Length: 260
Image (cartoon, rainbow, N blue to C red; front, side):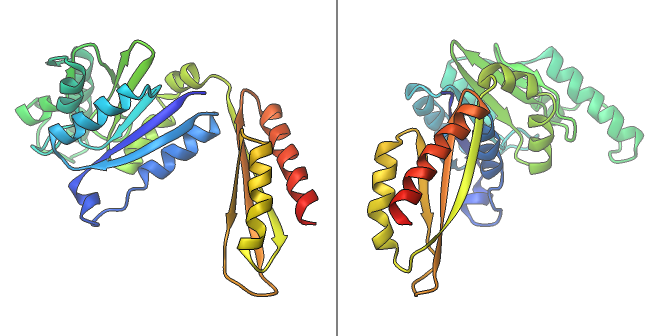
């Protein structure tokens, strides 16, 4: 199974000024393609902190590491510099990235959104990629995404603006995702169980989980009382939709047999 770590970068998230919706979105994308997110980390806009998290993810053998944020033109956009440090690669102006940034600013100038289309030092910063990384077009914003392959591991650096991240994932990144995740599939089912006390339900959930180790079983508590119904989420990933559905069916049957 393809394993994924997500590193979200931004002081504004740690200060509670901005909510991290990117990780939630990427989790849904990964599970839908049959992968598994092992860890989500939120780190400040500091090269050392970002690089340390990346090194740890790679040491733990993550198949893919997504970084979110820190690709813009300002001094606190440090993600690509951190990727360069974590991988021991120098930062260089990537020809394709330069072209993408130039094209975007020509388009923005033609629309009257910026005063000039010329390449400035701060705009060039967005085209500085670690050596060996590949620029990925940003259909919405100015900063390209970047993909670095390190043997069987990959680092995908995405912008932090949710609309830009989503446009890249659902557009130019699709070919890469299909290559990495293949035709994996994720399925889930929700069961409604009459039970006023989650502690009484716990032994049945434990038994079902033990009998179906490849299936995730989780109760969603809502309170106590004779009329309380618990929602049980059962989910599984597999090489095909049919296999994932089969795993869920077996776990569902086991649970219903125990709690009916």
